[in-house]
View 1 (tube, rainbow, N blue to C red):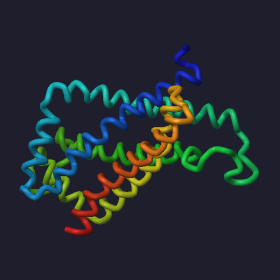
View 2: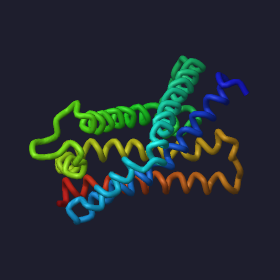
View 3: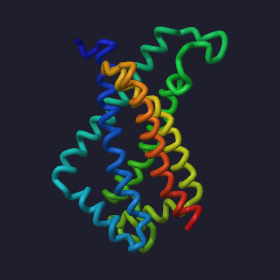
Length: 217
């Protein structure tokens, strides 16, 4: 199968997306340690493990490559779909395409903007391109996270971003399996239900942190 074919692009986008979805629970597990009332000890230990473990260090560029592939092939597939149907429908929602499917590109773009801002803040602080708040070491990510999440504006933006990620995941997971050929009258409804449950769980889990720290301290 040529790598520049439509099927290959969709399959690579689906595989990269599923790989990224597997990473989310790991990230959520570490972030939830922010809520443990031990002065940041549990979170700092987990963050140190993630930063120094050789397996994790090797996985980091693989994860970045997964993001890159998902974004690139997502843009290519979206562009090809728009080129194949340059004229919009006369009536809104007149196609058979679900609402979530129609706005996959838009929700993905919002998540990408959030991710870029989130990673930029993390890496610029880590390498010393930006100064941490006064009295906080630049490697003290626990204190930095608390300061960010205690801001209602940042927390609201964080929650909104994960709501859009939830919408994206809800359709993306079952769509990815369908793209990879898993389409069966018995299994497809189960995958759709599992995808929706996973999307809700991830959205609720990540949203719990700013809700607790910013709005219900």
